[in-house]
Amino acid sequence: MDIQQNKKLVMEGYRLFQAGDIRNLLDRYHDDAEWIGPDSEFVPFAGSYHGKAEIAQFFQKLDQAVKPVSFVPKQFIAEGDQVVVAGDATWQARQTGLTYDSPWVHVFTIRDGKVARFQSYYDTAASERALHTDQPGQALSAAQLHH
Image 1 (cartoon, helix red, strand yellow):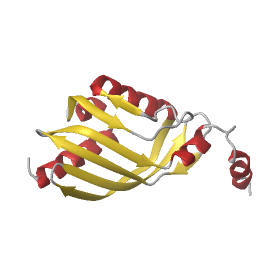
Image 2: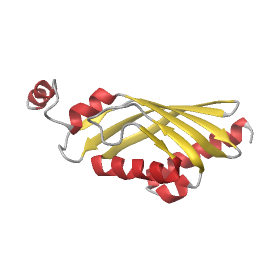
Image 3: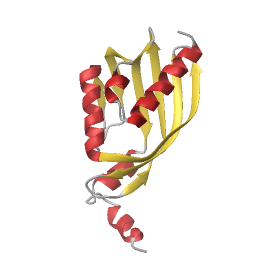
Image 4: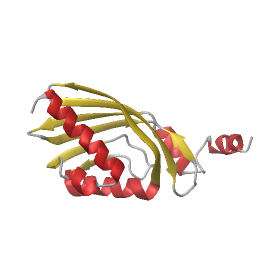
């Protein structure tokens, strides 16, 4: 696949995610795909996942923990077998009701027309504060919400 086809594949994946069509999104991943995210003991969907079944678990954990208020891919940069996407998201933590902004960067590696590797970068501290009200710094944030 060429660079434009790689970008199109990634753009289609975001459309499927936004539509909630995770099954068809996963069809765009290799069976042995790697999904790598930041580690955090307080973010239930954090960490790395290997293979389609585990990546499906990521989406289940994400959906159980947060719901997207806004998820906007803004910039697509493709070179060789990689597509880098920068965007912004606002999430609402289901357990606490708190919302948080999370700018993100995703790096896709494409092999034979499918995603072989996905790496995500996002603000884990913002996720932790919204998901766990007992985290240090949360009391200040909660107090600020009332002013």
